[in-house]
Image (cartoon, rainbow, N blue to C red):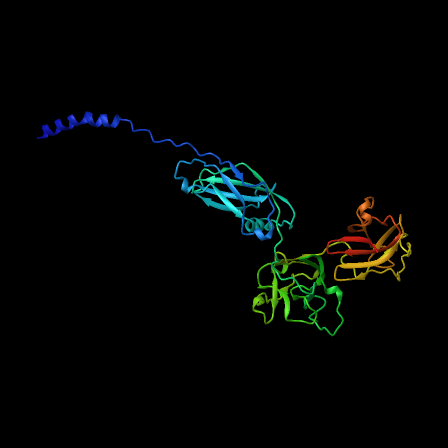
Length: 393
């Protein structure tokens, strides 16, 4: 019996050796995919608001030919403001398709999110990133350039019917006074720099509260916060409109809160996007409480008397104006302290012809040059933007 077992084992050995020496068949080889080629249905998009629901842009691309079911291929369509290398791109994920559509509203929202202005053309960069569904083998497509023009949409926050807003609260120097029977201090109101943006500069007391009101003497209407305990909300965030007794505007009922440190701050209310910002106002000479004009281009000449009669009228916290006769070919300065030459406002470059009529006010700048024709002019200075204008009357 032992001999038979040995015989069987010796007979099986060649078969085992032969099987061990046989080569497995080669595994299948799959080529890598390729970057897609993207194309757009338009090179410029400028749709009216009435077409908000219509498709205005289609981005298409070729098949990357990955070695799997094409219905699982992943594509990331990215849109960004041109020249930013997609650092702030808005991304849409598409699976198993070779195109995607954008309605006018979708594209408009993207552009407004980039901070674009209404009715102004901007270049957009667009690309498609392809990959397997698990993100392997990612390839960037060619770069597309499309010009987009955002259309105007209603502001996110209801604009004040009064056309103005003002600050109230113990966090400001004006306190909670809101008595329509008392004189209104224009220094507490904001400057309207465009249709939907209001800016005010105020001294704020650290760790306190305030509100923004549209109607003097009325507590039922206000601009406020949804929640004032959100970290960082003292420096900015969303705000909204609240109206007592109106269910449509029942939210946003918390007071604004001031920054921790007392000081001069610039508050910007962006009604279009529904956000506000609070930033320290550190400009040289701070915010003036008075302004006068002096110079040989004015009736005052260079006589810097403390009782200079050519005083500006304050219109709000940041805006001043005065009407004065200006003599052609002369100079003048604007001073925040009559009788004091230690502080002045001028212009950065008075050699530019356009600076005679408009430009930016600069602390300790060069003399203003008078317009080319002698006459009566209204000079306005707005420290919210540092813009000045000289308009013939």
